[in-house]
Length: 102
Image (cartoon, rainbow, N blue to C red; front, top):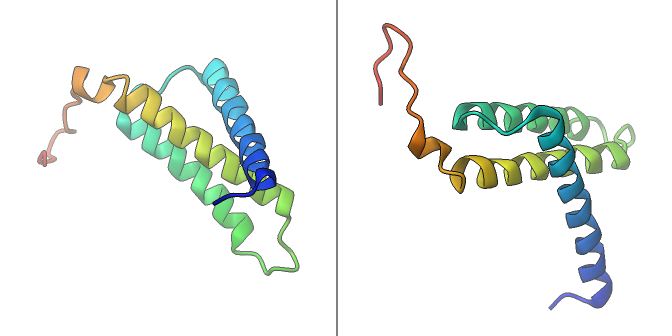
């Protein structure tokens, strides 16, 4: 069971994630495909990895937190805009010429 302070902290983190989600959606619009959503999540994961892979003495907790919030916000966008928004079902993308579809 979580303590009250742990719940309050988690709520503050979720608020930061929702703010990032809202800001990114306003700035860039919704994801156009599952591939785009995956690419954005991957980019944010790479940015988090750049901070995580540093030696502990060189890591910046605020930078790790910011990047982790961005990863979570983009994952939320993926679920809301791509999966629950039905974009994967509504739009089918053709494989590039010469590629076999799975």
